[in-house]
Amino acid sequence: MSRDERGTAVARSPAPALTPWQRFELGFASIPWRVKLTVVYIVIGIVLVLAFNFVRFDVTWIREHAWNVIRLGLPLTFLICVGAITLATFLALLGALARISRNSLAYGIAGFYTSFFRGTPLLVQIFLVYFGLGEVGVRLRTAGYPELGNLLILDTVPAGILALGLNYGAYMTEIFRAGIQSVGHGQSEAADALGMTYAQKMRRIVLPQAIRVIIPPTGNEFIAMLKDSALVYTIGALELFRRADLAGRADFRSLEAYLLAAAVYWVVTGIFTFFQARLERRMSRGYIRAAEARRGWRLRAAPAAQPGVVPAPEGPGSSIDGGGS
Image 1 (cartoon, one colour):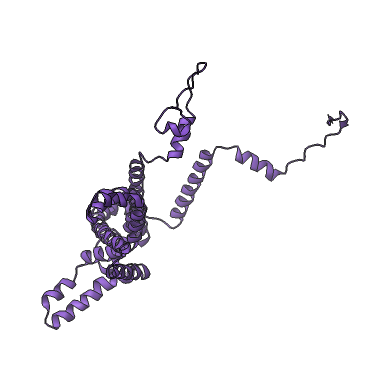
Image 2 (cartoon, rainbow, N blue to C red):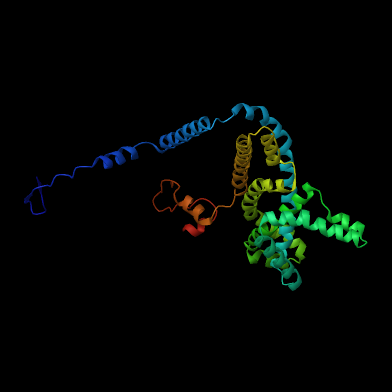
């Protein structure tokens, strides 16, 4: 029994009984999240082990061939990716500067470049660079231009670097453009007022500030390039996936070879993701929003005030928070 505002006795209805499913949900919600996540990972591991045993997965073959596949294939994969990301960064910078310029020729070339390489598949571009340019080179040599023709006939690794660099440079052009335009116009106006040239303004003022915005998506592009470098396998480059595929075909262990390659890509991607996150945190130091900083100063414990004395707030910008003279 309970009483209302007038003091009249009111009968309290009994609480509805919980269904078994509701009891299960309440009990499941009381379990810590980390414990539930650990159980999920354990179940996934058990399912994978049972599946591998069911298909007679050859772990011994992986142990015998893993080191050779990694030792011979991974360095070439890194070489292709480093060369391609260097080329892509250079092309992206040139493309971004052309996209924000008022030069119609530069803007048109950059627009065509980004439109073509973002609008066609990467595999097609690899074939165009390796087979297409090679055929053009043969035709030029037949026409009496052997030196120019030889320049267009590329080996597998240079062709892969060129194709990946051209493709990712088109995507990174928009990243660089957005990073440059994120710098306030007042910075450029101040540099112009100081008499800086365009190159000096970009090198000393704009690019150092834009790099903080450019680095995170550029790191993501490099991680994606690590995986897309496997497409260079189609033109015969002996990178990681090609090495694993050849080893698996020789012993009729394609499943083991493909899972080995996938595991290596997964581990390498995780390592680069970890270091990219650390780099982002390091570069973001010192860039705290003014509102967050002022909120932190307001939450600081103020000293005990004496009669007739108004304590001054601490920290820079204290006059904004009400500090008087």
